Amino acid sequence: MKVMKFGGGCLCSVSDFLKVVEIVKNEKDDCVLVVSAVNGITNELLNGIEFAQKSESNIEPIIQNIRKKHREFADEIITNDIIRQEVIDTLDIKIVKLERLLYGIAFTEEVTDSVKMHILSFGERLAAILLAGVLNDKNHVALAFEADTIGIITDSCFENATANISVVKKNLKQKLLPKIQKGITPIITGYFGCSENNKITTFGRNGSDYSATVVACGLEAETIILWKNVDGFMSADPTIVKTAKKINQLSYYEAAELAYFGAKILHPRALEPLIDSKINVTIRNFSQPQNEGTIILSKFEKSKPSIKSVTYNNNIAVLRIQGPGVGFKPGIIGDIGNLLAKIDVNIYSIITSQTCINLLINPNDSQKSYKVITDLIGDTIQNITLEEDISLIGIVGEGLMKTSGMAANVFTAVAQKGINIEMISAGASEIAYYFIVRRKDVKETVKAIHNCLF
Ligand code: ASP
Ligand code: MG
Image (tube, rainbow, N blue to C red; front, side, top):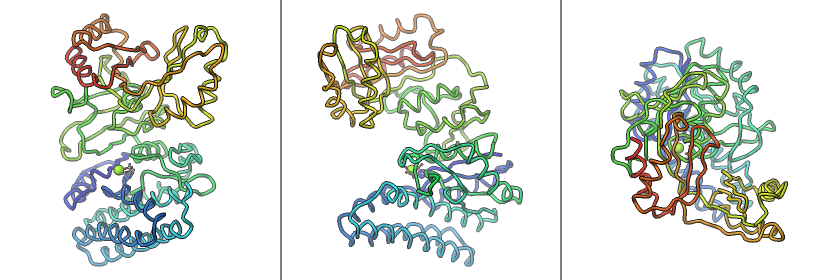
């Protein structure tokens, strides 16, 4: 069995929908599809939530626009009158529900997390109905399923939910296998699930990647194809390095490291559900379906131990906590971690020395983190500074620790450009090597390293 996910970038135009049909019809394996919202709809829903709080009169134009977009696709693509009318009616029922939720916000002038997630889930609900109609019209039997009704159960972390895989397994097998056995292609809404007490949760923006891996795990599929509008993972950001090459193969951990690091191509947590599975994931370019893409092997397969990619992340800040004795104070990292956890701040990474603890965090969290940590200034901690004008550079690949002279070569290449490296983290993982430079130097650094390594 194969799970194929079509992102919003694959659902932009009439010809996109027809291309999806072609891809699905050409598949010989049993297929399960996971869909994102039609391009732009999730943003439209976000606007809807914001504008509805300001005035009721903002709701109608947004609803009209969403209805128009979906109906146009149905009108232009679906030729069978009965199928088309059924799709339009089903879409309308959903859109009325959406409208009511938005009016609810306008009347109460407030929006809870669960209502917000519920509203955001409508993009995927509408896309699944539409795509199922299109496939049926083209003589491929398909049926739309909503993640909450088929039991994609998650925790209650509303905007960054985690699926309960063992429960999902039981539910999906029960709800979907009989349909698949009858030759029906299920089309499942991506992006959201629901908590045990029936509240809609989402997996964060671009969360349909994660949905696809959850569904594949749940159904014990063999492979996943994520159709996107890029070629796959690259050896560097091609807008910075003209000679960047597509990476054909990545190990599970390499891909996870790159995704967490901020390579926008894959949802950062998409690989998590697959940790114990033999399922591999291929990223394919929707506009160039003949291309091979990047295959991410399961951790049970051997990948080539080479250096794969140099990447960067500008969305980073460093909180530098200094004091002569920080390296000798038991529990200090725990204290800091607890304080930050209380205000919901996630620490990406910690780089320490005997006199300094550096926390890598999201810049959105930096001011509030700075504030709470200031309370710790006393005997041990004497000074706290915040660095925001920085970038994190990462070099990723299974071959890293086995390539002698790599660090020397990289640092020489960077030094030759007159760029100063401020902080280094190496050896924490066998496959990634991180360091910090000033934000203004990020492009030159990436170019210099790519030149040196590839
Ligand atoms: N539609 C959601 C978003 O735009 C989820 C997704 O595209 O995967 O973020
Ligand atoms: Mg999207």
